[in-house]
Image (tube, rainbow, N blue to C red; front, side, top):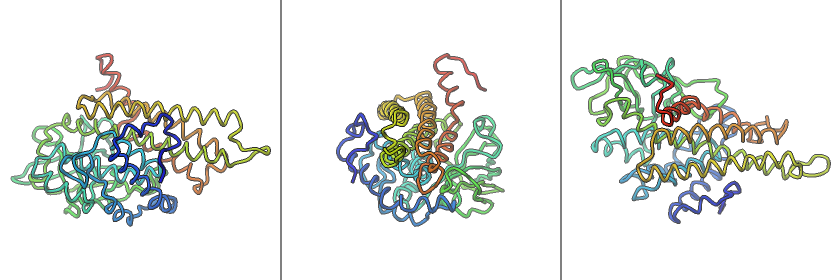
Length: 393
């Protein structure tokens, strides 16, 4: 088992308490032995390796951040949660996203937006990964503007709600047991959250084909036609999009950690290749331009990691704000794009072959760059915070 990543130049992992670092190393070993041998095959097929769900269940790492749920109590730190996202993404961004959607977006929506009865009803089985979650926010015609222009509607009818509309790019949705669907209440025009159970009449998820990023993730386009959801399945703590933003603020930081994981994965591949590949009778690692790209990559990794450590501390202290997670997401994923490009460049023509792994990171990086708020939208969130002026509606 690796004791320290070669990319951890400033030994950031040493900031974790011993018990939390053991959990991180447990995830590292799992990703290397159980996940890595499968990913290229399934990436090429564009399918999700469902046999991994049972292995994730045995791993027992879901629910770690949530007090009272999961195998390891009390709740672990945001620093561990972030490094766990980094660690899984370092091996494969798609499999990490499967876990992140379930353990982050879906579980956190219930943990922060549900009442105690709802948390006790759903979170134990989700922490055990007996039930898998998904999070349905983005729509076919709505992305960054979904806060004010959500087209999916909810209409109260006695003790039930009737949902109509469509969602797109929803990870895990083709097989999830519980899907958090966000819809605009027709009566008060506020966004509300609903836990829609698998096979509900009128709920139809269709897998999106022909993707060239996150090919392992089963993203779906969902249509909702008169889907009836009981009032007991409406998240009781969500009354407006402002409440939803509290969830996105937390999960956006997790995506920044994924960006770090992609950088580390690409850097490790490029460094190993540079030591082995010979040109003009010597390893290309001895060439100045190759060393320049490797050092710039390591600089991006080290700077991003430091930013994310402080973000985690702000989260643990309960004082982090939208602009904190937005700056991290925008900055880290921009640096990520640079690192995967340098990594593929070091591989030369061999970089376009899936067997060498780097192209998987190169293409998957594009999905991470775009979701949980584009760079432009996150930039404008930070811009509003520092100027006091909004540049978007």
